[in-house]
Each structure stands twice: as C-alpha cells, then as structure tokens.
Amino acid sequence: MLPERDQQEYAALQIIAQSISPVGSGYLSREMGRIGVAVSEATAGRILNRFDQSGLTTKIGFQGRTLTEEGYSRLKDLESRAARNQQGEEFFSVLGSQSKERLVDILIARKAIERELARLAAIHATKEEIQEMWAVQKIQYETFSRDMEAAEQDVQFHRLIAKAARNPVLYSAIEMIRQDGQLTPVLEYIRKTVHSIISYDHAQIIRAIENRDPRLAEEAMVRHIESLIHDVNKYWHYVEDN
Image 1 (cartoon, rainbow, N blue to C red):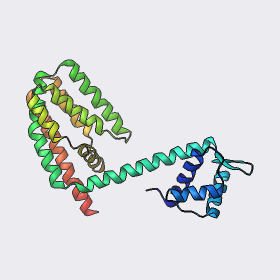
Image 2 (cartoon, one colour):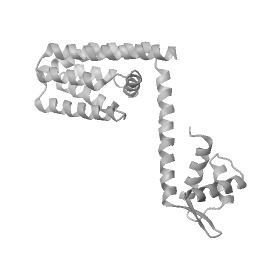
Image 3 (cartoon, helix red, strand yellow):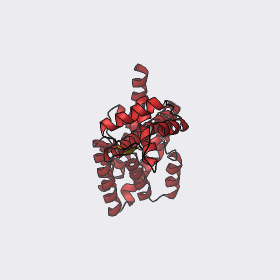
Image 4 (tube, rainbow, N blue to C red):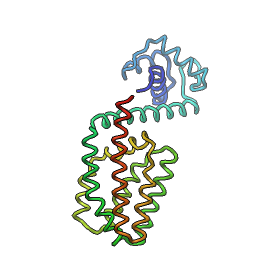
C-alpha cells in the first residue's frame, strides 16, 4: 500500500486525468470521497495548489486544472508503484502460506523425477534443443544480474529438459508437481535472499547434456535440486534469526 500522501496524490491525479473538463477543488473532493479517499474541499484545494507548484497541473482560468505532461508522467510512476506494492503483498501472502516442510517435500519429489529427465535428455536432446537451453540460461543470467524476476526462464529451462527427455509419463509427472505457479517465484525470492545464483546450476546441467554424459547430467541436476533444498533451509534459519 502506498503512503497516505501518495495515495491522495495518486487518486487526485487519476481523477484529473479521467475528467473531460478542468477539475476544481469541490469536484476533486467529491470524487476522491467516492473512491474512498476522503478529503475536505480545503484539502483538495491544497493538493491542487501543490500540483501547480510542482508543475503537475496547469490552471485553466477559474475552471480548474488539467494535467501537464509531467503530471501524466507522475501518474504513471504512481500506478507502477501501486501495482508493485500490490504484487508484493500478494507474493508475501503466498510465501507466508508455504511451510518449509511443504517446499522441501516438493523439491525432493522433483529431484526424484528430474534427475532421470536430465539423464534421458543427455541421450535424446537435439542440437536445437540444447541451443534453446543455452539461450534461456543466458537470458536468465542477464535478467537475474539486473535484479529482475527470472522465474519465467526457470520454468522454461526445466520444461525444455523434460521435453528433451522424450518420456511423456515423466513429463506429465513433473508438470503436475510444478503446477502451482506461485512456487517458482517463491523459490526465486528465497535464493535471492540467501544470495544464491541459479543460472550457474543450469549451465552445469546443460554442459553435461551437451557432452552427452547421462551420469554427469543426472548428478548436476541432483546438485541443483539439493542446492535449492539447502537454500530453503537457510532461508528459514534466516527468518527465524531475524
């Protein structure tokens, strides 16, 4: 949730932007109250004056204000912040609903299946599939380096290996285990918190597949999943200590 002053500013800018005519303090006060941000007409007037001084609005005679280009830019910035805050609240709600034991159980199940998928991928993967794995790993590394979310690339990477294994039963099994779409971003958040880099694990797995070494591919996948389990345990120790 945005701070109170930012909430007022966000609501006021939205109302001015959506109005087909210049907005005055009386209208602004009524419309803000209608969307649950109650302010007096005097307060609405002070908000508009502050907008004028900041260059967010321009005064049209005695009719009221309209947004300037800077005002639209500020509105867009507040919209982005509000969206990020909402996503953050939803994310931490999901994270709070996950127990350490549940996450570890899921990872143990993944280890049992994905070690075999990696082994089979080293036997059956085409050159094109291996190239695609490297492309996804590169994007994931660059995305993570810029402190952006790389959960989508993680899902793509593991799905590529499952597909390359050419075993539809194992593919369906791992898809069922990974069907909770919130688990990947939760694990990514945990790894970022404990400063663990997932793209390095993926590179080791691809290299083994590329070298057509089923044993090393299996071992690399096992190390990867066991590293995830370690990170989950480390994260919970961190939470408990803080």
